[in-house]
Amino acid sequence: MKLMLKNESKKQLHDFSKARSQILNENTSFAVQEAYKTLRTNVRFFLQGDGCRKICVTSGAAGEGKSITLLNLAISVAQAGEKVLLIDADMRRPSLARLLEQKATPGLSNVLAGLSTLNESVRKSVYPNLDILFSGDVPPNPSELLGSESMQKMMDTLAKEYDYVLVDTPPVNVVSDACIVANLLDGVLVLVRQDRSRKDDVKRAVQSLRLT
Figure (spheres, one colour):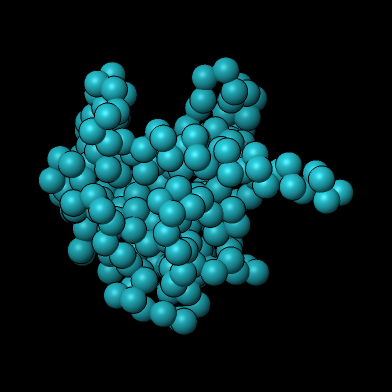
């Protein structure tokens, strides 16, 4: 048992190390940068109109790369001069703080539970125009917090301060958190990973989101 846990820990470290190498930077290939610019443009046209654009990213199953994709989309949008807030609402298995090698607390769960304020929890990133609200302490009741009045009030407040609010949520086929958050947003991106995502999982994820 100890050996299995040790090996799992090493695999997780390897996965995060690999993901960090995929974060957009000056050495990122032209093709990858252009792909995110295209995604940025598509999101902009999909969410036409004035005011803050609020979207979340989810997937059918775990391990499909939604968090690194959302982080890179946030960086790309911020590079275009938009004021962006990135929120890690995957409070069960948060990853943005580990990807960026930052402390996760205080964060979203602390704000929703009334244990800290937005001013105390939202942090400037190393990327111009991009702020981040990490997940915070792992709560016993993520779904209840995400569906609370505090979450609604927080999103209303943030919409007045940012051009984009991008939210990372758990896989929709695993828990209902993404469906709960989707009701507060303008749109949802469902990530599909080539050679990994299963067609049935993707169909089930989209159907679940359409029923919210």
